[in-house]
Image 1 (cartoon, helix red, strand yellow):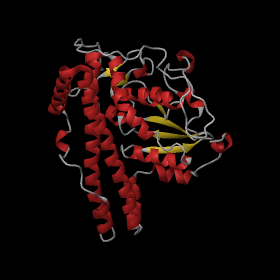
Image 2: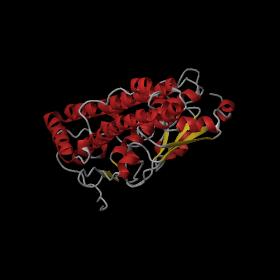
Image 3: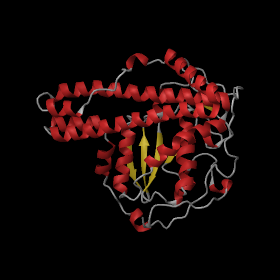
Image 4: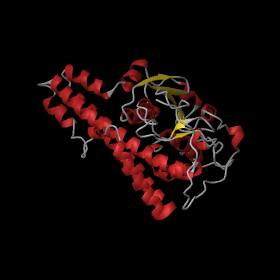
Length: 358
């Protein structure tokens, strides 16, 4: 993308507000206006995103089981099983989760929306509550497994676990960089809406700023206090890539500097997108910088913490999208430290910073 194109205004404030609006609110507006087909279309898109989120979480969960088995053999498999059993034994919202995925919604909206729009919205709210509980359950289950990896084997092995799962995840998330920026933005925003994030979006000359209030994954988890008992998920403060260089963070959030900083830079030379995650464990809101040109080197300067280009040395340029004139920047976190160690059979527990009391 040319610099001139990146600086052009792409979307109006009204278009950005519509894009950021909760899908449930969009459905309600359409139904009350008698626009049943439009309401069903939005519902179908939301449903696809929710299934996609559970698919990604299923891959992440099964990937962690496979990682622990491949790296640590029978001991690793047993650790994953024990962590899972312990998680479900104390999970505070387990009774709110159904064994099966929620029923289809788009057909419900299409068939009943015109005759009974208010009743349809009540039914839709019930189904969406099931989806939200399911998203939170998988997020916390993943966090319990990550806590097990970190407490048994330390930050290097936690990074290795993120990389094991992140190869396929990041390849899928970063597909389609040649599409027009408005299409790439809309696709990414829908992914966030599938987390039940609350969003506002503003446009700047070279990028979009997506504010989540709260973030639908780590932010909602922080607001729910999952680092406290009964779950007691790990809090990480090591001076390491997984904390952006020493920023105290929740265990779930440690995937962000690995996937979206280090692995993105290794693939395309810049972080993607730039997640301005807050330090600590209590703040539920965050911002994401979504550059119009996904290879814009300005993104390197926006990474939180101490993961700066000056401190981490250059690496060979990876191939970018066709027609790109950009060269790769430094591969954050890959040249300044040794590769993650494999702690086969390690049993010592890593000291974890004391959690604040509820």
